[in-house]
Image 1 (cartoon, rainbow, N blue to C red):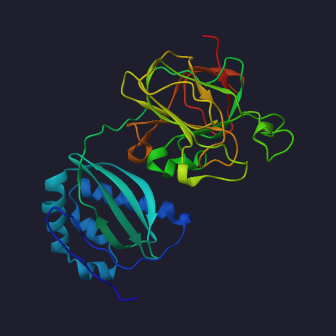
Image 2 (image 1 turned 120 degrees about the vertical axis):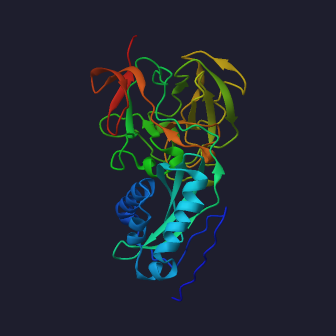
Image 3 (image 1 turned 120 degrees about the horizontal axis):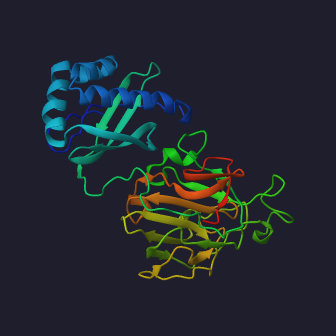
Length: 330
């Protein structure tokens, strides 16, 4: 493939983008290492080190002195150091990282050759950093379930093995929660939502909050089918007093019991667990985020104040995959 070079200096921050090859999601670890090395060298002002990450064609396209000038004068001077790089998506075979600088946010696209050398690098135009990034909740939370109900964590935790959501910035650390008995989530006809133990269970407010967004009118799927056009399905988003946003997705059609602007107390019924949106079976998708709309959000860790975990009482706990969880009496 003939390579194309685009070099532009100034606010656009378009560095270089060459032809890329796709190595699949299994290569994510190599890309994360490359992103980590890039961030470390950049923050230390070691632009010669960044040049050393390039393959031969990149080095010809952007010689060492040009690399130094670009990063020192066109990136560092305008945006400052990098605070965090979070994998966002695959694009044209490359990996895109949502990158949070001191003064702005931008997306950095990186492609690697088979020897894990950078053969393509694109920095999108910067955007002002206006929405604070959350690390975890400050507001004490209880599980959004009735007292004696035990739920199962299908996806949850902070590693990719525990939680496939971690590679999606907007849903990072989200939970998928369902109910299990004898190793199964349903009994009877698997094509009927009513066969699933979680279907129709009440979903409660985990804290005192304001209802900030409601989506209704989405039909529940036949189990095994999905509705990616209406991703979260019937949805409630709460805003806590600490400006944290808790999203409840895939609720049952017609079950939402609150309206936008309503103040709710901890334990208020929000709706019922359903199978609407991009969902293959009845479950609750639960996530903490830093803004109202999921597509603009960065996910954060959601800890619960006190709960039973696999029969043990835990405090300030973040549930992980395969935990059985239920509320305590306190």
